[in-house]
Length: 344
Image 1 (cartoon, rainbow, N blue to C red):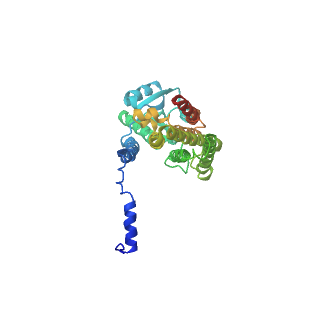
Image 2: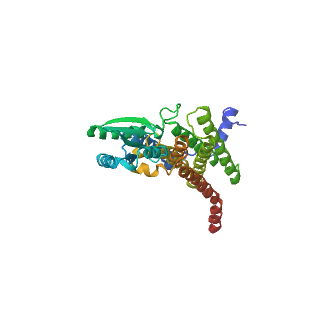
Image 3: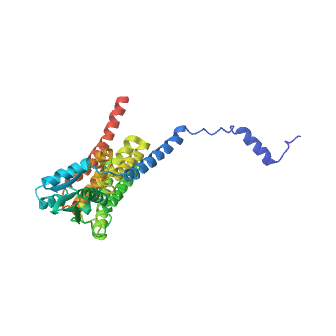
């Protein structure tokens, strides 16, 4: 009797190899899987650098509002400085001062005495704007052979020497709302839509309250009344969260990068804090007040230094972003059902 040669383990391995299918070559991943993340990353970095570095490269004043007393001085300033300023005639120095305190203008200019000018500025509008105003008026005075005395009548808070606290608060709250909305995208299979809405709304209130208390009473960098500041920052967080959730829901994988560009990149870069809105290029000025970060910075400044002047418009803008985004999210299931019914 003849037995097969080889050990038992060798015979078992041979039998297993004979029964096993031949190994398949691993499928090559689609080109889109390589290109999409790379292109999105390149777009984000290009937009970020272009906005934050490009907008600060050569800021130029454009129709800076200045209250000017005296018809002769008004005409001379407008002729000498051209489109760089927008002259607001004032009947006297007191009227010009009140316009500056209401944030209707960026500066107030009057004749102090023959051959002397008195320039009032508001440090609260930002160092870039006040520097531009001082430079323009100084250039006019030098050419006209006049001296200028400058007074800051609306100075920044002691713990906000560079005037950037409002920007950083708005940036931080926008970032928190963005992260909140991004995380909510992964909860569709865990929480019902109404529960996700409650999560976004409740967390936005928590974000706005925490940010207002930390920046205001604790750090003393944002001297706005606490309750209006809480409302403003809550609406900013809600606008960022619901908008991020909306874009991710409707656009799929590219929704979050689009939200990054709109809210964190373009929105914060054009907010008018680091570079005054009047010094931005025309395209950036056009979107500055319409995006949530820009609206928030304006509201924070108005509440902190100008008794709430011109804060209502930005607050309404924030509310519209939050409400419209939430409304469109609420319509999504209904649209999906209609599409499914039409297809069947």
